[in-house]
Image 1: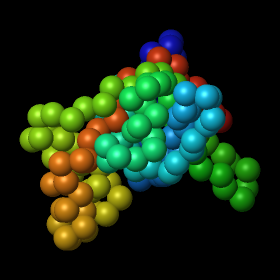
Image 2: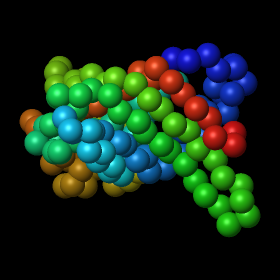
Image 3: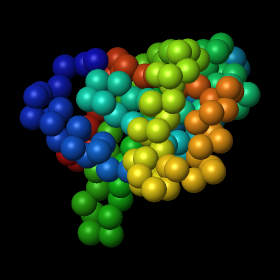
Length: 145
């Protein structure tokens, strides 16, 4: 990860604890960008995203693992904030117990501790095609933080 100050890292970590929507950009072999909204978890050094093996984004990542991700908020008063991550990802398919724990963590951020117990996302958690996109960013840009 690029060099950022310890104070900026704390601000970024606090910002990313909110259940915000990230937008993840991949590119196909011809360079055509593909941007999708995703749920995520940030552990202070790694961004974790769940996805399915048959999605366009995962198919593109299997050929080109480089992505950009932006997580931001825009307020009416001009108090805009955001973080951009760039780097190459790993696709994590095993072990299933590790995947389940990460899925529960990510989904609980958005659905709450009761919501994560519903039929969906429980079916997502157990789906064998669900995997993790792991980004340990090579570059981090804090916007207006």
